Image (tube, rainbow, N blue to C red; front, side):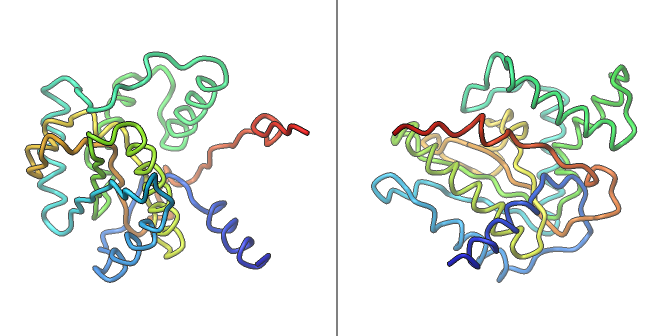
Length: 224
């Protein structure tokens, strides 16, 4: 079992938020295997509340066009309220990630126009050939959202285990009404997040940095 743990930690340590992709689609077989693996995550009362809408081919570009137009012309209205503030270590980690991204692609901190252009890449999925929209069941409340969060994490890890890059994008779900209309998603399905995925472009500068993780001593609290 120790070998299994090593395999798992290798996958965990190699996963990162991929923001540059090759123009190469993932096979339907591999996508099915990723979703099947992610579906093994533990859930409250075995509810398995997630549903997944995945684009491929021209549909990815069509969706990107619709989403970009929404981002340019409408206000964000996510199904889940976003944090109003980030403070302390949370703000530090958020800033660190943003500064690392801007530095990697050559954007100065005071270049607001360039930062805005980089932000718009979210709605073009950073050139990924696929995007998955993850929805959860409204009537099951926060526990369904928690379960779906586990599915999202395992989706990214299963993709990594297959040599496939991904990035989980809350920003995309800011335009929940647009997404709901585009995919004909009913009102009882809350749009939780998007996952852009595909084969990583290792030459893309945005893929050249890695975010840090909190020291375990700041996370774990033993009693007894």
